Structures are given as C-alpha cells and as structure tokens.
Length: 153
Image 1 (cartoon, rainbow, N blue to C red):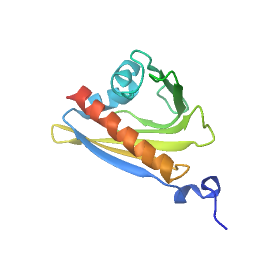
Image 2: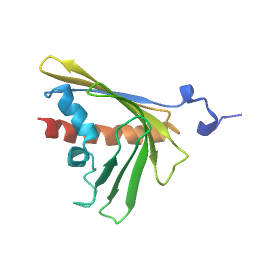
Image 3: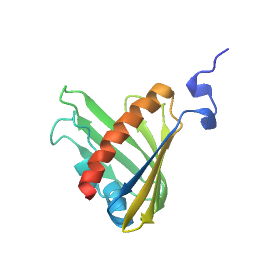
Image 4: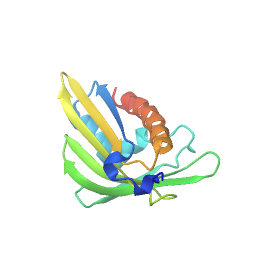
C-alpha cells in the first residue's frame, strides 16, 4: 500500500538545496532576508500586481512572518511561518506554509558564509508534501534568487 506524503516520515519527504554566490557581504545578504523593505524589493514573482507585496517580519526565535501579494489575475497569495533559529548574518531557519494549504508546512534554512569579498548562501527547503510541490518551489526560488542577486549587485 502506498503512503501519502503526509504519512511519510519528515526525513523521507522531498527537499531541495540551492547554492548561490553573491558579490555582497554576508551582512547585506542577511538584511535582504530580514528587513521587510529589502525583502519586498526581491521576493515577489513577476506575475504579482505591482505594489501589492507586503511583508511583516518579527525576526527572532518564535517570531512570526507573513508575506502577501496579489497576482495580476486578482488571486491573493500569502505565505508565513515561525522563525526557529536566528543567528545574525549566518543562519535563518523558519517554517513555511501557504495560507491556502496550511497543513503542508515545510522548513527553510538559509545559511550565509563569507566567500572572498562576497557571500555564499546555501538555501535548503525541506519536508515538502510531494515532488510536485518541491519542483514548483525550486522554480520559484530560482527566479527569486535572480532578483536577489540583482538587488545585491
């Protein structure tokens, strides 16, 4: 009998890891993740309605975040979660769940290390509901990281 994704142990659920090098110091990369105004500058999909992105970040262990936007189609999207680990300029761990599927909570880890004159970011998103969710997020994160790179340049 096949197991559903929700029944699988977390360690067996799909995950993804993306690595990016930036020509910016770790402090600047950290700020792009933790300052709401900077997050708004890179975090939104190109299909979102201009000016609709909102970010509320309480960056501390146990603090919550919420990012919301409206698509050009009029569809409302919101993602949020709780910060589990906060090590300034080095590591940020938080839960991730879309408002439309709160039962599909996953986990994001952003590790930032000095790399020459810049920074190396290792991004891990794990505990996806299924492979389709992982693949959709891999595409979305890859697009967003191009925008992050542009912001940090």
